[in-house]
Amino acid sequence: MEANQRIARISAHLHPQNSQMEESCVLKPLECRAKGGAPGFKVAILGAAGGIGQPLAMLMKMNPLVSVLHLYDVVNAPGVTADISHMDTGAVVRGFLGQPQLEGALTGMDLVVIPAGVPRKPGMTRDDLFNINAGIVRTLCEGIAKCCPNAIVNLISNPVNSTVPIAAEVFKKAGTYDPKRLLGVTMLDVVRANTFVAEVLGLDPREVDVPVVGGHAGVTILPLLSQVKPPCSFTKEEVEYLTKRIQDGGTEVVQAKAGAGSATLSMAYAAVKFADACLRGLRGDAGVIECAFVASEVTELPFFATKVRLGRSGAEEVYQLGPLNEYERIGLEHAKKELGESIQKGISFIKK
Ligand SMILES: NC(=O)c1ccc[n+]([C@@H]2O[C@H](COP(=O)([O-])OP(=O)(O)OC[C@H]3O[C@@H](n4cnc5c(N)ncnc54)[C@H](O)[C@@H]3O)[C@@H](O)[C@H]2O)c1
Ligand SMILES: O=C(O)C[C@H](O)C(=O)O
Image 1 (spheres, rainbow, N blue to C red):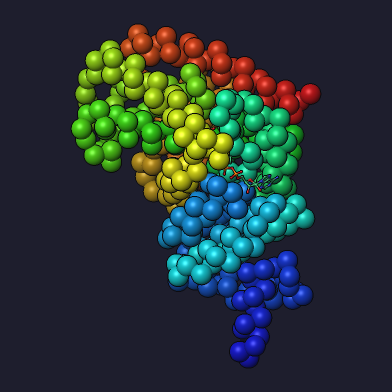
Image 2 (cartoon, rainbow, N blue to C red):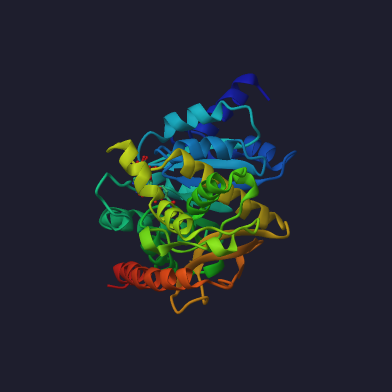
């Protein structure tokens, strides 16, 4: 192959929107490389130029399970793509800018991670983001239904308690809904819970496992401190301090950032931890278990976050809550009341 042809192909691959070359010609060499020596999964990030999207893209580019990484946003996708693509790791990176390129970003993907949408400012609840983010999530999920209906979807955009039901309704309308493949990302609550509990116990956070169930907003975030591993006990004051700190973790960051957004770096870390678990599940690894907000029969609500087992088809098993103490049983009732309303709000947004 002529050197100038090779260079043209690399350039066309990175910026397909600028390419005059035929799609088959553009994709072949690098897709082959991606599928060759290091078999891996194709992952798209929607909202890749944002506060979460950029560090998430960087961490996904470092993940050896990823062979192709598509970065989509309505702004700045080419810049982020150029930057990330210089990292000397295996994944091939391609950028997609704006709605006309959404289909290209999604076609053929195994996993789609969605951190697109506006973040909170001090004084706002996650529900205050509904009016803007509901429409963004609907549009992106319509694209997924059309272009990669079998992909696993990791939904980060808030309010997660409503955006996951929105996504489910979009997929139902399109006839592509598979409850196992739609997962609301509540991993940051678990990451925070592990960190805060480890601080109290004087342990390394990597040794601690705290199940966090319910949803992803205020009282719907329900840490099960009676089920912490390694087994331990807390005083009443410690339980109250930890529960409140875990439930208000997002607000703690929003206030500290003072108008400059919400958690982005810890969220990117949590998102990659969760996406990596989904990819290990897709690969067929045994015993991959994480908390996520999924379609569920654990309570009377249609969606609920609990531990799930991740496998080749997504959340293959949804675990029960396990034994709760009195404090957690009361918390569960508060969580279910608010969560039920948020779920209904999401469903009504599509069904109206
Ligand atoms: N689930 C969680 O635990 C969790 C944690 C932190 C933040 N969040 C949520 O994640 C979302 C993103 O937060 P952020 O800090 O990255 O915000 P951000 O504003 O920094 O980035 C959002 C990105 O989304 C892009 N975007 C907007 N509309 C889009 C569309 N239609 N298609 C594609 N991209 C679009 C923007 O251009 C921007 O680059 C917020 O809703 C936030 O509340 C969730
Ligand atoms: O708190 C927010 O608004 C962002 C996110 O949901 C978080 O928990 O950090």
